[in-house]
Every structure is written in structure tokens, then in C-alpha cells.
Image 1 (cartoon, rainbow, N blue to C red):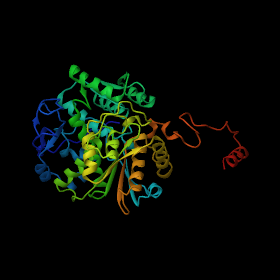
Image 2 (cartoon, rainbow, N blue to C red):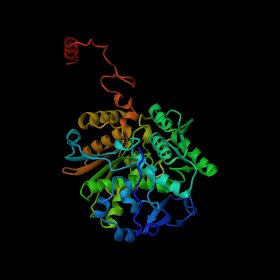
Image 3 (cartoon, rainbow, N blue to C red):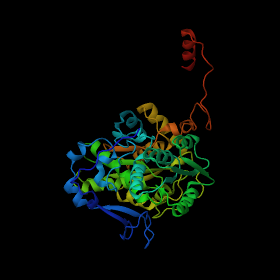
Image 4 (cartoon, helix red, strand yellow):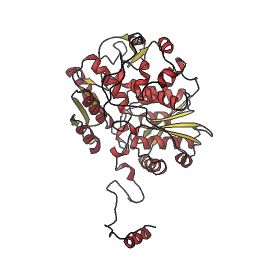
Amino acid sequence: MTTALPPLPTQEPATDRLRGLACRNCGRSDSTPLAFVCPACFGPLEARYDLDLVAAILDRDAISARPPGIWRYRELLPVVEPPKRGLAVGSTPLVRADRLGDRIGIDQLWIKDDTRNPTLSFKDRAVAVAAARAVELGLEALACASTGNLAGATAAAAAAIGLPAYVFVPADLEPAKIDHALAYGATVAPIEGTYDDVNRLCLELATETGWGFVNVNLRPFYAEGSKTLAFEIAEGLGWRTPDVVVAPIASGALFTKLGRGFDELARIGLIERRPVRFVGGQAAGCGPVADAWGSGSATWSPVRTPDTIVRSLAIGSPADGDGALALARATHGSVESIPDADTAAAIRDVAQLEGIYAETAGGVTVAAAAAARRRGVIRDGDEVVVILSGNGLKTPDARRFRAPEQRGGLGRPGLAAPIRPSFSAVETWLEGRA
């Protein structure tokens, strides 16, 4: 579904609030179109805003009067104005999860359910911002390197605004995620190797083609879309922050942008600044940031050959790994390493206790919350928000990984032989199951 979005008020100084891009490491400004790496120190570029101006023109009442979606926070997003066309993204539910909280020992647990976005993952947020910027720049195509969810999000966003989409993925990606991108008419290129191999290829393609690669040459804009999760959490809690936020770590951008989102809200006076502990989760079979955390190292080492069912997080060289590690340390949080069996068990728990079907990244996040609680990072009485970043329909085999009814390995669930359509036959079948 597409939606026409309301324009900014004519008196709103939309271009003055956006100060362009600057290097996160050295602070150097850069106004080059499609720049994403600092030419001086090779650090990542980020969008910068005049937050004093934003504070003067934005308040809670203005936000609450706007339609749902990420563009209700438009002053804190790096586009001149919201797009005239695009998918209806954001304003996903913040769900109280008491039964799951009882299972993992957390007194006040909330689920930020981003399985409800148009293509069933949080990637719709980031891609919406990148696509809007691509339109402003007059680019002729959208493209991406993807571990799965980004493939569908990019393809759908391109379809909604009328651009061709080119999606590059590891050849062994889950078929459901490839089919998802194909359904929107994208050109999908399966590449031999890992996600990091795909990403290196797309760095070259972005230079040669001039396409808008959402997570390469549009990355400074793309990454800002993840902040809207922090904005919605704060608004959903009555304009305050929780004690702990738990999120998956792939590239690390989602994790670090959650921290930036809360910081910006505090700087413009929409929330009171309170300490928030950030807990990240990575799969044990591809967890460079979690491994660094566990060893006490100041830096992470790349994982060359991922070995995990959690393909959506299988990034061996995370672009924002340093930032994720720093955020967890600075806030007295943690980065948890989660075995695949724990991930699958967490997927089953959240589905059966809260009625929400999460994909593997969500299983990692729930399991990370449980691990952080056991180790005392999450304390008695803490209010905790867990990010569920994608829908389990994209990874249907994962929940059965080492499940008791499977007795080993993945595969189709074992169903009974067809039952005769009679009460007595069903009664006999139910008694047998009991």
C-alpha cells in the first residue's frame, strides 16, 4: 500500500535545519552528493542538524497532530521534505509482554514489534529515508547488498516510487527472502560468498553505476531511518526512556542509531535525559562484536566464515561495530553471544507466549535479554524494551532448529496422517497427542 504524505508547512525552514554531512571520527564536513566516507580519515559520514532550530519549531503537540509514520519526526530526518509517494512505514506497536517477561525473569517487558512494517521488518524505516533522498538527487535506480530483509524493503520502496531495483545477495540466502524481493519486480543477483563479499562488490558497483545503493552511497541517510525506533519508543512510553533497550547487531547501525535517537530527543527537550543501558545480541556463529565484548577487547576481529542459522545478522565485518561496542560499554550494557538453539527456542517462546512470530534476529534479541538478565545487566524492576526487527514468515525453518518434536536438524514439521472428518476420529487423535 502506498500513501500520499502531507507537505511541510510553508513557514517551516526545512533546509536550514539540515546541516549536511560530517565525519563521525574527525568532524570534517562534506557536501559531495552520494559521499559516504570521509576523504580525510576514511571515517563514516553522518547527517548533522541544527538542533537548536529544531527545538524551536518542534514540540510534542506538533508531533501528535501528525499522521502515523516515520515522517511525523521529519525535522530529525535528513531530507528536505517528506516524499510525495512512499510506503506507510513506522508507528508499529509497543506491546506489553508480561507472559514472556515472566518466562525470562524481567518484571516490566515491552516488545517493539517491527514485524508490522510493510515488508515485515525494520529495514522499511531506513530504506524509506534513503529512497526519499534518492528521489531528491534524481537517481535512476535503487540497489542494495542484503542479508535478506533489506532485499524486500529496497524492492518494495523502489516499486512504490517507480524506480527499478537491483538486489545483490549471498547465493545461499533463505528462499523466502529472495522470493520476497522478486515479487516486487526487483532484479536479484545471487553472489557466491558471504555478505561481506557481496558488500565489497557493491562498493565497486556503486562507483561504476551511479545507482543509489541504500546501504553504500546512500548510507548516511539510510542509517538515520533507524532512529525513528527510538522516537516511537519514547513517544509510546509517554515521552520517556526505558531503563534498558535490547536490539540485534548486524552492521551495528540500528544499535548505535537507537542511542543517537534518544540523545537527540533529549537535546531538543522532548524527553528528560535519563541513563539507558543498551544490550546487543549476535549469533554465536557470527558475533565479532559479542566476541570482543566477551574477551574484553577494545576492538573486534572479522569473522571470515559465518556459521549460523541467523543469516540476517551474519555480517563478519560490521561497519558500525566499533560504535556498537562503545555504546554498550559507555552505558553499562552488554553484547550477548547467542547459540542458534537458544535463538530458535526464543522464537518459539515469543510466538507461543505473546502471539508474535519473530525471525531469527528477533530470537537473538529475546535470548540476549534473557542472558543479560541472568548476568545482572538487567536488574530487578527494570523497564526493558526488546526490538523485534523482522517477521518469522521469512525464516520458517528456524523455529524448528533442535526443537523436541524434530529431534535434530531443520526440515518440514512432522504432521499426522490425514484424519477422518468425524468427531470420534478427532477425539481419538487428540487423546493420542495428550
